[in-house]
Image 1 (cartoon, rainbow, N blue to C red):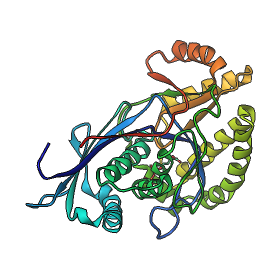
Image 2: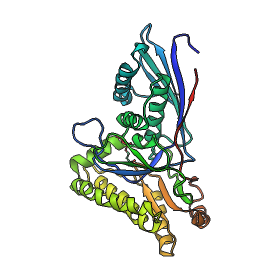
Image 3: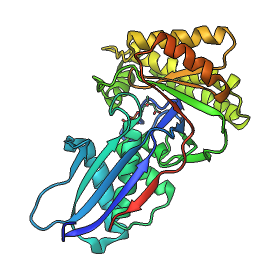
Image 4: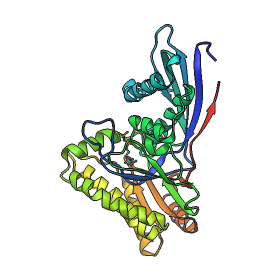
Amino acid sequence: MPNNLIGQATATTNPNLAIIKYWGKEDGLDNIPASPSLGIALEELHTVTTASLTRLETGGGDRVFIDGQPQPKRRFTDFFAKFRKLVAEKNPKIGRFIITAESSSNFPNSAGLASSASGFAALALACTDAAKLKLSAKELSALARIGSVSAARSIFGGFVYLGSGAIHADQIHDETWWPDLRIIVVEIEKGMKEISSRAAMERSKRSSPFYQAWISDAKENMDKALVALETRNLGILGPLIRRSYLRMFSTMLSSYPPTVYWKPASLAVIALCERLRFTGLNIWETMDAGPQVKILCLSAEVPLLMKHLIAEFSNLPTRICRVGGMPYLKCND
Ligand code: DP6
């Protein structure tokens, strides 16, 4: 370990899959969501991030590596500025420091699998632990949000709510709430998306005639989804999940220039879900800013769904996920 090390910590987080989507930010504020979201931690997917704080002695700057690759600084500027402000308030004796963060995930990065959610949540946890800051989960969630809105949800396990205009997320239920709920992640393509979710949602806001309708409809959809979650009723929740992602995508397809994350294989998997629903299966797909398809169902229906997925899409990797728990930390110094 370098002798100018102030502190080092490692955090492990799950990506948080929105079943009711956030898409769009409030005007001119600090990364505040304009639509409410409801998400689930995905147990089998995780990001591990180690943050090291070293005393600023001879210059040098903050550095972030994902899978060993250096990342563009501008993506982290606001987050690190907010983190330094917290350190100055809560543990000023640390003085000036450099942050080095190394991160890796067991799933593709920037491909619509919520890697920015687990990534910034892990970064918030690791940095604040390395600086010995004692923050509540809500404060951590607010810090993670500066990096990425969906990361505010990844600070918690289980079922997580983030209101429109909110600065932090809240856990509604932990991972034990719905033990037989499963999320099948169908990986359509590994490659990085061509346009970031941040740029795509800004484009929707700026140019889609449906954007305002999306925002005004979101609250009603969320209210119904929260009721369905309380009774663990997938038959009621499912159509709301579908409505949320399809309406979110309607703002992308109708923006200028249009944003199209879907690939032919994404549509083929959606079509399979639709067919299986007609035969009585209670399965509901959703998608994010990328081509991957995630399917919610109950554990009893997994074997039949997997049989169809393997028969029709043997080339597509799939992962069966449970609802994940809280992130965890390892202090390294
Ligand atoms: C479609 O949280 O990645 O996954 O706040 O600009 O970093 P930024 O965007 P991000 O957007 C996630 C969008 C989504 C829906 C969701 O997770 O709620």
